[in-house]
Length: 166
Image (cartoon, rainbow, N blue to C red; front, side):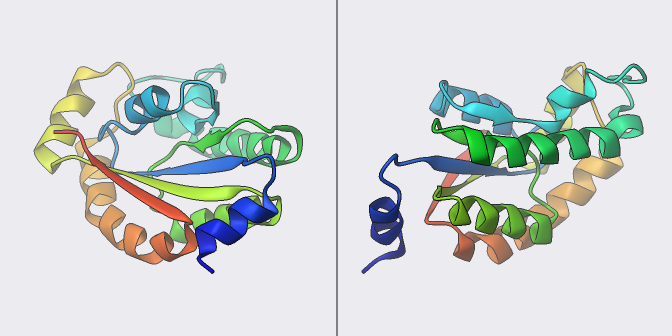
């Protein structure tokens, strides 16, 4: 029996947890909001905006704070939601991503990995155009590691979707 079939049978509410993976400015949030408009979104970048020291030109100042808020929201959502759940982020911390995927599965969720791919040139160009931007160094660093992270975490997903956005 396939992994996907087994989890659907064990998941009568058919709850899905969609984990985003992709470089900064690859289009993850846009793709997720189009594909899953009725999902509950957990996006550390949205939590950053709530912090009084948030600066859209230097969001790293409040990154750890927003990561904690997102982790708390993730735990709460697993216990209290039946709608699809989207966990937005680069996914480059593969250990944390695998932990979250396993945690969601243990709560009865079907796991979907949505890998959004764009060229480095496209990511850098988009990053420069948006209000909340990160350094080129960070974009390049994440871009260089996201492929390895994908290889490490993809086996933990029930379904893998790859979308190219450039």
